[in-house]
Image (tube, one colour):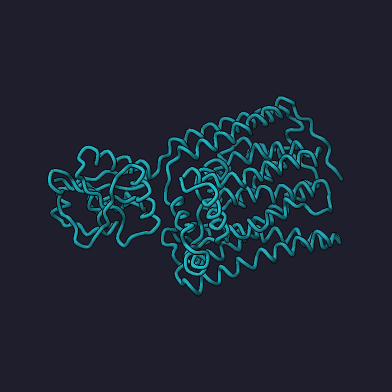
Length: 486
């Protein structure tokens, strides 16, 4: 049974279209000005077009925990659009165009569900995965958009009781499987539920087609996982930067991620709870909400089991779970907005403010560029300044990033060598610079507040005690610079 049409104020529709256009522009501008960091340069490493494809498949990609689909796409994009940081980040325009295309088709195809689509957009863009991850050269934006299209298309087909194959939904499946294992886990659970429903309803064409696409998409993931386990034994264990937690602390961490992932959208969260507990949500929508909740419960349970063997709990890994929450909130708020039209305006206003705040934060977030600017200023003050960059042993992503930033500013970098210089050269100082996980406050406290000694111990530079006694240090946005005086 089709759900009844929910009256939407024309001003809200026009305002949402205007906000969508403004959001696209702001996303592109934020990708220009936001500073790069480790995740950007990790993709520099794994999507390097100079590495032969066979070498990348057998020797490079298995050393990373992520499946290689995004790296393959990013590599082809570099050949097409260039090697600049902004040009590389613009690979995220591909999923954005796909999302806009799906919205446009769904708006025409499901006129009775336009209130759902409008609210789905307004709540969906109020997520850290949408705005912040667009300006990062990584697969997270791809994952979030693929999940938005997949879950949104499945929901519309359920609400309208459509039996035909949804090609947008099918197109999202390979990206859900081949971008990240945790996204694949949640998507796999939901696919099993959807295929099971289709087969029980004797919808053989859609059920078998969806199952076939899922099976074909799952095979490369299994092959990549096999390569990670057998060709690079440490690939799945190289997670020292992820803190280990027990089952219940991990569950609380995941639940704590969700408000931030939903943009602290307490208006939508509280409105959804009001609609649910007051019986505003009709029976078909409630049944779909139970399916979404079941997928979230089973997927999170399987993840917690896997987390006992290798730490996996990181906020940016939960794009699919966030989309499940976005969809559930949207279903509940459609029912509430049918009774309180002013809620449309409130959610539109919140989305507009949130987008503006995210844009300002992205432009001001200079990440590793802040440290690079500090180093460049010090070198400009004394051109003979020598700059040793990176940790020991070297981290390839950091080395690529520091070299990229230094080249932009005309700074020559020297490696960290076993025989270190204890004092400055001539009339100029010597700098030791790292942006890779600087010493924590606890590390600095261990060294009695001496940031230079803490940084030296953390980065493995091996500077002498006499040099450190005269050294000063400065924190950057993500790193630290130790200055040895002349």
